[in-house]
Length: 186
Image (cartoon, rainbow, N blue to C red; front, side):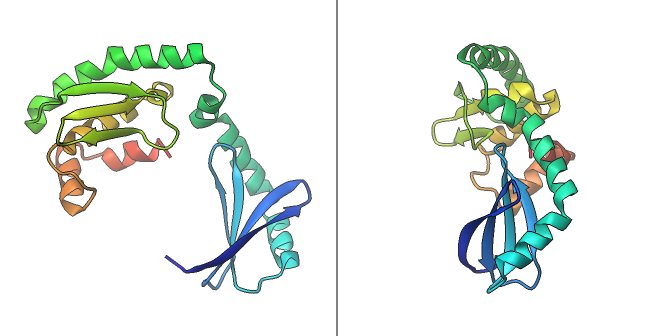
């Protein structure tokens, strides 16, 4: 990971652009989050004028990424009403137990408690010591294979707590397409 020297906000036409100085050679552009936020990583001492020129040349791509972000399930989730969140929770309470029951014998594990929360930054969590698994209700907005991936991921944590090579090998053994499923959540 390149060292970061600092960040600053500039305005390019009608866009807020976060400029992040790093130990790199070229300018790199990202549109991140449901908000979304435009970030340009730049070599140290890159002028705002240079950044503005770069952003203007990439404007069509930026607009497309912004549109995708605004239409994403995460953007929908940010604007959800309490009633919608309740509906998602009900959907999860209906679907998850069957998935857990199907995968427990395959993995040779037993989840002790299932919980459901509306979380902004995690799809699920697992407490291996207690066997408690929590699933994000926002998964109701994604294809069913994404929910199954998260359930299997959390059940695997009952066997392997971290995300190291042993965990990835287990995921690949039991769900060979887990990386493709995970990619749909990004």
